[in-house]
Length: 214
Ligand code: AMP
Image (cartoon, rainbow, N blue to C red; front, side):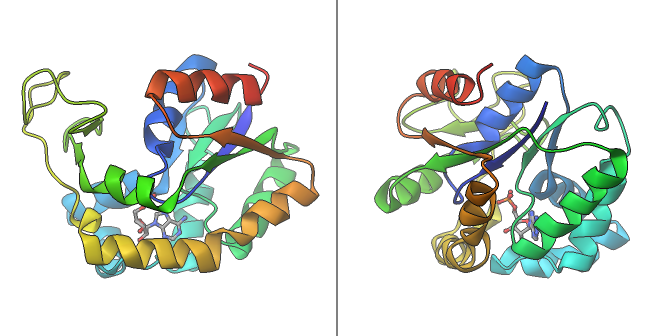
């Protein structure tokens, strides 16, 4: 199955994407995670993207598309995927369409995560992640068993740099201007499924499975 998860920052896409990919047995492909890894390893790509990420701006399409096109040819992505964070604008959506057409493949579902503005701010402010394995926690809705460390590997949790308030506001603005038009784009093609993304991770996951008929 080929699925895109769409929604503003803080909608809980990352958590659900990991679970959904496991459930379906397909790779979870998150451009944000790939860029963060590149920044951490100080690779040439990392040096190119770090500034954009710190500012809450989109990385230029040429770089992002190249990373995604390469990934779509690797590690089982030809058989299916859950995309989390790509496409982020109409030009990226067109690039993805062409790549899938070349593979003779097509999208099955595009899921819209619906949340309210205040909910987003609340979620992002309490969000902590494990820098080693990427597991996300929340002080209120999903606290780690031991405060401040990852349940899975014991690594101290960190607050993502781009979850700072100023950057969050910028990311939301960029989402509204660049990414939101994708809702109409995919709705017109009959691919959009809406999911109420407020509530526990388990409840949202149940709704997500229903929405895609899995
Ligand atoms: P995310 O974890 O998906 O919120 O992504 C974190 C940051 O990585 C974004 O704020 C952008 O700077 C960059 N990024 C991730 N995915 C994309 C994309 N598809 N296009 C451009 N920039 C991206």
